[in-house]
Image 1 (tube, rainbow, N blue to C red):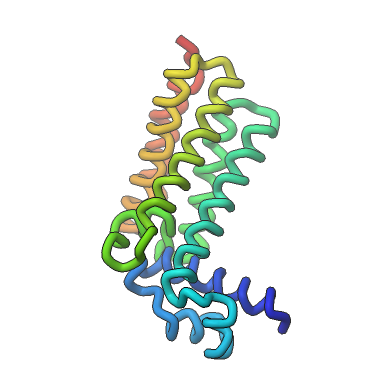
Image 2: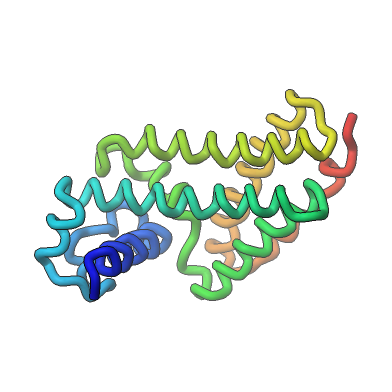
Length: 190
């Protein structure tokens, strides 16, 4: 397989391991075992070792969600449909992994301070990017900028919290509850 292919397999494996095990569970050996990549490829693709690999995986996951937010915002339907799409994505992801895998960015936010240098800055930037994307979409749907910012914070916080509860209860109900309670807020523009 090509170098790019090997690197991508390793990043994909690191993302999945982050989702399932958190930063502590992403070791070079675990990524190699999951991806099937040869040991020498680690330092070829990630000269900074494990930390560089984890940071790359976090960025990849963050970019994926940011792209989903942007594409949902550009699709017809407005703020409510954008949030519907995000909730639907997480419901599929949780179901597909039998509730084993949550958000890799949140996982790193919770346990990375000592494990992955610079992860705090990367996680902050990713959450800020998601919030800015949502806030921009809310503004385009007619919300005033300060309210759009608050709604973006609420949506990210509520969905991330619901993902954790879904995993704990092995049930999609918390995401449904969040959507039910947030939906009316996305209809009012005052």
